[in-house]
Length: 159
Image 1: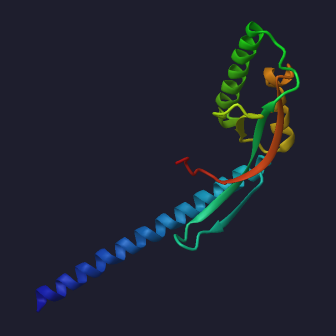
Image 2: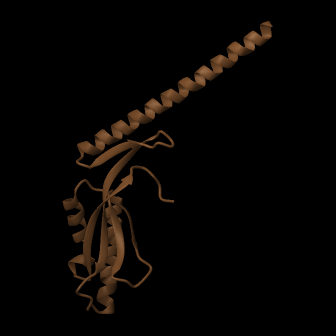
Image 3: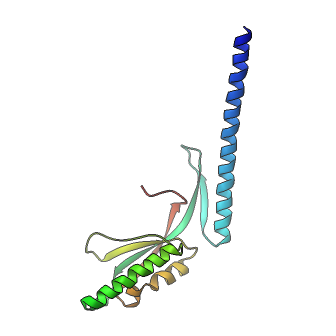
């Protein structure tokens, strides 16, 4: 009887500790989400959050800007000029990524009017537009930019 009582007390202690640890982890996650939200809003980013009904996790949504790089009106460059522009274009996109302004860029696999996209991680449309239009391909008229605000969950990976 004494062993059963001791076992029961130990089991309750273990369960109590697990529950406490889970609650602390949830509080830390909420604080972390709150801090991230405060940091983003202080920098001018648009954000909102909601509670996922299935997981009960707080999901923080952030506004990004997708720039569609479309076929421009001036595509008359010779092969050498077009190659130089392509090198400068890739350097520009690399710089945007290195500076933290762009999260991902890439071309489309067809030969359509939309040549590629860049997702800008900046607080305003004006900033995304300015960065996208500073691309050497855009300046040369080989590409034109079309930008749209886009919402995504902060910190979620691509799959």
